[in-house]
Amino acid sequence: MWKRILSLFGGDGTATNPGLKPILDDIRTLLDTLDAIAAAEDLDALRGMEPAIAQIGDIAERLTAVVTAIRGDGTLTNTGIVVDIANLIGSTNTPGIIRPRPDGSGRGFPAQFWTLREFLSWRRTGRFAQKLWAAAQASGRDELVAYALGWISGWALATGGASAIASIIGAPYRNEWWRARFVGNHVDLWAWGHATVGPATKPYDAWSNLCEAELQKTFEVPGAGFDPDAMMQSLLAEQPLGSALPDWFTDFFIGAYDDVYGDLGPRRPKLDAAILQDGYAMTWLVLWFQSSAQSIGCHASAPAAPGACADPPAWTTPTVAGGPESGGITTPPAPEIDPKIKPENIVCAIILAILGVASILTGGIVTGGAAIAGAIALAIDAGTIDWAKFRCDLAWYRLYLYNALRALQEVLMLGALVHPYKNQIDTPETVINLLGGLLEKQIRTGDNIVMSNPTGERFPAEPWDGSLFSWFDPPSRAIEGPGAVATYAAAYPSGFINDPANPFGSASVFDPAEFPFAPSTVAQMPAGFRNAADAVADWLVAGGDIPDRNADGDRGLDFVCWEFVDGNWSNPVNIRQES
Image 1 (cartoon, rainbow, N blue to C red):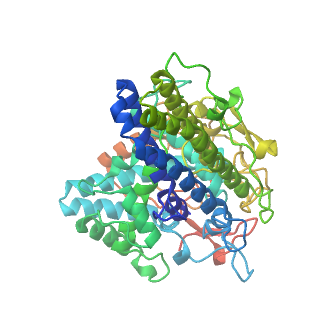
Image 2: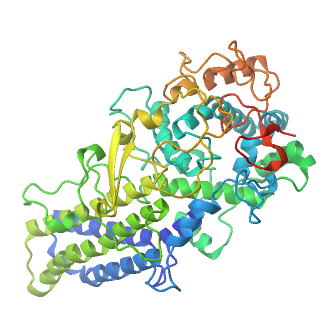
Image 3: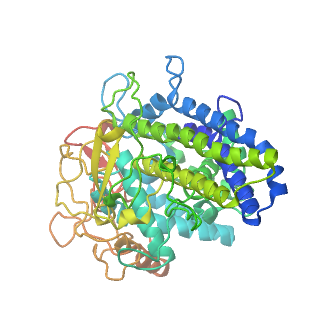
């Protein structure tokens, strides 16, 4: 799915797929140049901008091509990317652990068909973490020791906290894979503010948004030299994305993988240096798309116009204003619904909303661009210009771009593709209107989406079917039996990160594990865990084996690594400890 999105965002430079990013780059560069000229009131420089008149028209044509690439041209031979992305979210992205089999014989594929992310979260998790640590210590390389410690810390966070996050979702990743992304993006924003700025209470004024955090740089290998434009071209050409990881690292990681899982032979996902390199590069590129100022960027506050300007013209607000619950975020008008698409499918609703945003981009670009082009032409032909009006025209053009991109970011957030703005982890409810009110949703945000939700043994919900307008709220489907406990406490993510109050419990994820879980003092109930930072610090001093706990919080609190009997999902489930 990311390949399709990034290929369209980057484009290939052709008339049919010019790419949204190159267009945005051209608009930003043009506006920066014209702003400087207007500020200096440099008439000669403005006369030299005659090529910009043609460029503004070219931008509108290229945007039209992007819209066509998204929604198709109305024929069966060119349906755009809508159908593809709908299928990817609703079916192709179904975790292999419960994916329906083509022959109708049940749900669940063998482990060799899982993603590496699924496999490393479900199989021999403690043994793999311990092998990385031992191999790093033996290597004598500080970089590998630091990496292994990071992996163990991540393991402790996941095994101790994933079930708390799953309690917000209503099910583990396996059964609610797209809502898991949606909730995860909100939790990531909360955790980023807590970790980088420090503990805070609502409205989190001191915290920053993630849309310009440049997260890709936080794990960038020195000298990697990644170029996102070139990488998106490689995606289109189906070429390797890069080879930034040094050989000593790929050998280290693959060696640990082979040592721990080699006895499985072909019954495990394939891993080699090329797969590892591409996985690293793709992670970098996705985080660049989500959190770089050079991508969509942040649009949390509107650009200010000069004080002498009148009220903004109507064309600068290309979307219908949202209510106060949405923090002032605007949402797109209703696009025309393709009769080939089922409107009740939430995936299609999100994509259609994106189409609405993309469609209205072209209108404002033409209207606002015409005013700017007319001012440049007047300077060339008549040797005069109203500088005050020109500065206002530029400001309105920027405001239009801001409003359109803010709406685009909002829709991408709804699609679980980018992070929300921080007001959405403060506001308890957000009202979203899609398709001109055809689909209106009140989304529980704020504490509802970043605090754990103790529900007793009413967990987890059975697998999502990949359709309906449903991933914004906890599922109301039947429980996958037997019911399990996800968490005992309603607490923020700091509870399993580093909160010394330890609201989730007092046990350590490094304690010995039993199947299906180690009972607490309450008979046959799992133990809650203390924060990961303290648990890892204690383990570094005391040492000992790292138990094989499920890193997805599946099927609930403290479950060890398990598997379906005969590899087949059923309700109630029939599970055993992993073999």
